[in-house]
Length: 105
Length: 264
View 1 (cartoon, chains in turn orange, purple):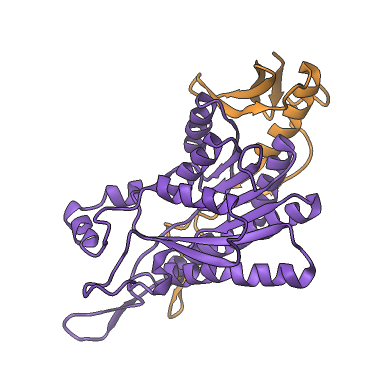
View 2 (cartoon, chains in turn orange, green; view 1 turned 180 degrees about the horizontal axis):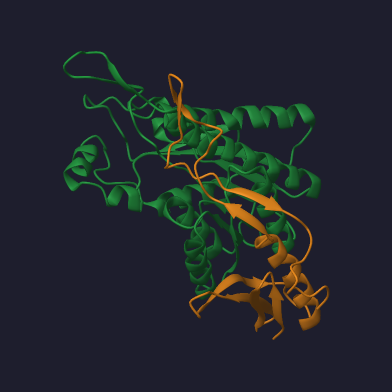
C-alpha cells in the first residue's frame, strides 16, 4: 500500500478487491476516506500515480482566507457594512509542490 | 441512460437532499463525486458509500467559485474518467423581508442587506450555473450521455421573506428550457436537463425547526408530512433512466396548497 506525502498531508493508497481506496490522516490522529473504489484493475504503482494526481486536485496547495465579503457591502448612506454571515473563500492556487512533496513517487 | 456504471457529481452532497441523492445513485451502481463545503460531512458520506460497496470521491469546494468548480469537475474526471449526471443541490437561505418598518413611526427602519441578497444569489443561482456550465462542457467534450439537474424549489412561485431565495430558484427552474434550447441550436444531442423543485423536505433544517411552526406548514401539505429526501433522490434516478424527460422542471411537494386548498 503506497504512502504519499503531499502538502504536509499523509495519504495512503489501499487495495480494496481489484480497486483502490485513498485515505488521509486527520490532525486528531484519525483518518478519513478521500475516495473509495477507484482505478479498477490498476497495478499498485499505476494506482499510486493516479492517486497523487487526484489528491493534488482535491487538496490544492494554496492559501484560503475566510472572512467578510468586502465586495458586497450593505450600504447605509456613506457607511459600508459587511455582513459577518457571508463566507467568501478566496483561494489562491499555484502549481508548485510544497517543499515536503516529492517531485515523483 | 442507465445509472449503473454512470458517474454522478452532486454539489451539497454532504447532507440533506444532496446526501440522499448521492447515496441513492451509489446504491443503484453509479460512481459518485461528493462535493460540499464541509469536509467532515464529505468524509462521513464517502465512508457510508464505501460501506455500501460503492465508489466515491469527496471534494471540498465552494460552488460560487469558478476555480473550485473547475477543480471538482477535474477531480471527478481524474477519479472516474467521465461524467454523466450533475446535480446542483448546494443551497443556502438568508431570509428577511425587503423592508422592515418601525412600529411607532411607520417609516422604514431596516432594509434587506445586499450581503443577504448576494450570498443567496451567488450560491443558489451562480453556483448552479457554474456547475451546469462546466459539467456540460465536460460532457460535450467527452461525448458522454449526460443529465443536468438544477435543484429549484416550490418557492419559485414567490415566498414572502425570501425575495433572494425565490428569485434564485425561479431562475434555476428556467434553466432546463434555456439550456436544452441552446443544446438543440448547437447540435448537442447527448445531454438532457431536468430541474427538480422540491416542496418542504425533511432535511435537518426543517425537522429541527419549531415543531408548532412545522405543524402549521404541514396543514397545507396534502400528503400530511414532509417530503423525504430519498423520495427526491428516487425522482432524480427516474429522470436519469427516462430519456423522454427533458427541458422541464418537476415539482415534488406532496401536494402543497394555499390555505384554501389551491395547489401552489
